[in-house]
Image (cartoon, rainbow, N blue to C red; front, side, top):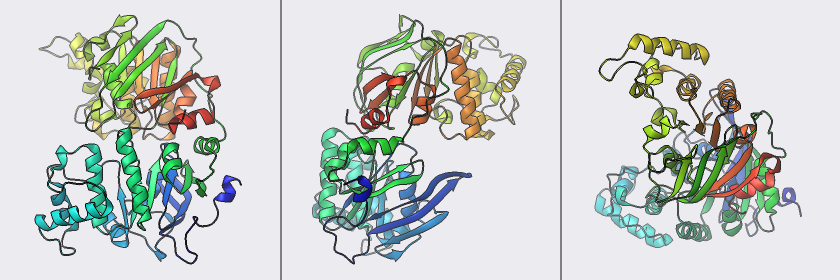
Length: 517
């Protein structure tokens, strides 16, 4: 039986005539004129665990945020337990019986678990004190078999403990439909197994669970049915997991074809960056690194694909000198910079485009001229430490604004007033200089429109053709494929595989993204 055939009908064991726990039909949603969901939907039955899978940006979380009242749909219909619903807030969705546990937990860190529950409940129900909230948490945790200590302060909890607290909170608010968004992304293997086993028990108690995931092993081991999304569309709705063809799932996640045109034409030269056995212990809220090894040559782009939260941020932090690894070496143009400071690495030719341009790349309140000068002031490019030649800074900024076509910019304009695309151009103008040897670019076109995205990719392409080496880390698979000479996949803090671009296939990428190769 084909996947398409298995997609029809209700899950095995569901009584006929029982309305779906959740049904979404023809859902459309756009942000700033860009469609995030197009005719998306699926049906969730009571007593089942239903997986929604797809790449980053496929629309999985957006669709469920519509269901949970975080976003209002532009088009489409929604029903909860057979009753038409259009929740205008998460509170309304929970009151209707649907609660969502997001990747970033919505708990007040300075409060205890019980205090967070009391805050969420407000004036509803009989819970009016911290003591009553503690009793309610303890009772619900015992009922569903999920250990939670109501007296613990949230900031003292591990990621797994916070997640359990969030689940109990949502269930106490009345949710019978539970949506879990990438719940195992930052859990250990044992924590993930414990959580997924709980999810199965919860479905067995009559609840309905949506599991948003990229990992096929979780689908195969714990889910009843699967819905696959790609580019905001539902490409497969409600297929039975039993007997599912993993290769077909990988193909549907990634697409029929992989567009790979437009990468830099330069031939790879000498080794510019060599990383050996880079290891880092996992932090309380992050992923560790496990014996990372990679080699990058001048005139080459090595694309690092992967689901967010699998160690990409930690790898960048180690490479640029913000975090010291437990073991391993980093060689930059043959020089050991493992113990070097970020400033020393920059002097050796390392440049970075961080994943969040304003969090760790630019200062919003600074003028454009000041942001462009940040990396050069200490080198004496604009005078000594006690006297800055601001006229020279403004002149250099004006030249950069012209060269990088930074629209609506003047040297004195506050950087935070620029659009995302033009702010990214400021960052590119500062980082892509003549002394750059290695560029670490993390999600360089994230959040940009098509024109700005094309500009960013063209700038990277030209820098590589001029002899720079680029480690491109991105959750956008098409970005990786359009620029890279080689493609690697990062999974759970390790490099899961690496191939020349000509050897990359949809099945290979999809399998490694799902953690099965």
